[in-house]
Image (cartoon, rainbow, N blue to C red; front, side, top):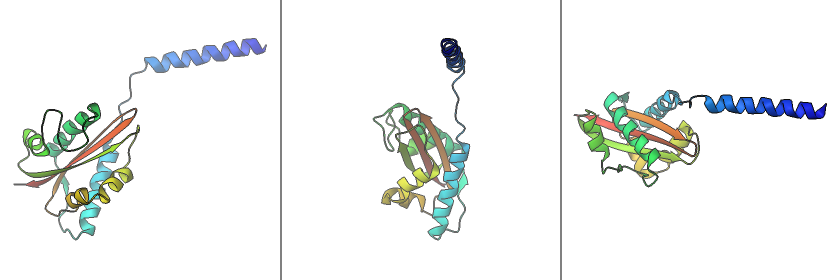
Length: 161
């Protein structure tokens, strides 16, 4: 009787494994995370005395997406420079943004990252905090991507011309 139960459990486990293995990979919807980071930057700016409201910009979001994917896939990258030598300014210009830009990058060596991880990385880094709290940055694009052992979030800040 126990022997039959073990075979049944093994068969059920194998069937589950086959079903899961055959399922398409899930792609995380990081909109909530990205929007949360925008809200956190808004808060930081207003705590710094800014009276303007930062707004999402599609071109800056595209530039952030390009760099986030690059940083995720090239582990030698951890800052502004892309694997092709691109900079935040060149990526933003290629995406159609006209104006001055700055960028912050957050990397977490895990499957997931949340907005508190991101803000804690940037808030206590004087260079990142200066970018986040700069009232002249009135546009922003945020993108995040994940792999099993690395999460990357890029924010590109803009001062439209």
